[in-house]
Image (cartoon, rainbow, N blue to C red; front, side, top):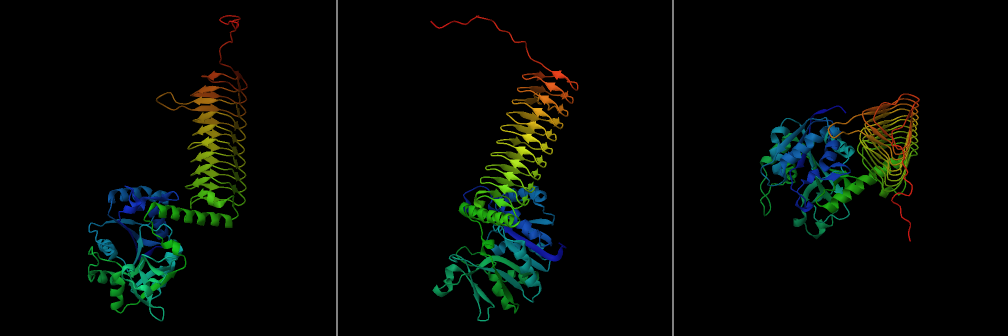
Length: 467
């Protein structure tokens, strides 16, 4: 999207979140794999703003450091500016702290830092309505099943914005109104700046409320618009762990429905846990209990049995993952089979048709096309060619206590059971390794490598018959 040079998005993320009962700042609690604040940043960036401001207060350094470290992974390329709020006297004080930034722009979109369910489409519609009007401000209003505790939006007979009445000040008729103030706005920057200078403190805590700027802007004879949001869940703020869990489920339901619309089969969709950034091809089946996260891409016609975990990995077409398979930061080519209870650690690569079976672990290795590591084996720091068969209990001894070393197993090698490869070592093509061997030296092509002690049988020595 082309950047809108006159638009700044301001995210208010200075709150403590006492009801979260956690030392972690509220905007950094995780929803579907990334912090609440990251979801809001992603939605804001889709608008193409010239800058995104984040107002920080409680545990400011923690929030700043976490966001700066995560911007690349979250795909945030828009300029992000941090504003420190030292005067914690209400929402308007948070915006006042950002005035040096806001003065550079014509339009300001103000968002709450605890609303991860916001959709960029809604924000774009709000901005477009505002830009096509002569208004000084626009507020996002949503109709909720239970408006108790929220400020109600009062409309005139013609539907125009009248004012906002807080729940504590509402009479019985007003409390029946279900359209509430979401706390998210679009402002003319100049109108906002003027209104902020005219605010007076409210309530027992003498706080400055951003809500009051709407009445002041209206008094300037500038229209204030209400944008009626169609989906109230987008405006849900998170103030407790229960609400955090609710937001997580809503987002996962969105992801599941979108995937099913694209032809993915989810067996009992509420029992799979798929992050928003995951891509899955048509006719792939995902069974209950699976966690698929990060930037994972899964091809078509795969079958993923229950309780599999896949993170930041690429899975090809026609892949079968059996029960309990665990894959992280790895690549699995077409027609591979894994599991049950196989483990791919980071930087593992399986070529087409490879198999990794039950209780086998692969770490930072390439398993060649059609090769098999079927039973109870550990393959680490290894380059394995095509058509290799690895017997049960095989181990690559890749770590000498100080450094990691590499094992090379070339094409069509046959490895017997219970073999140890002490790296660095190379086994050339078509070689065979006898069961129970500990291989410490190079094995030439088409050779048989055996390294085990001669069996000794001491007849009737030390053996007593039972009386």
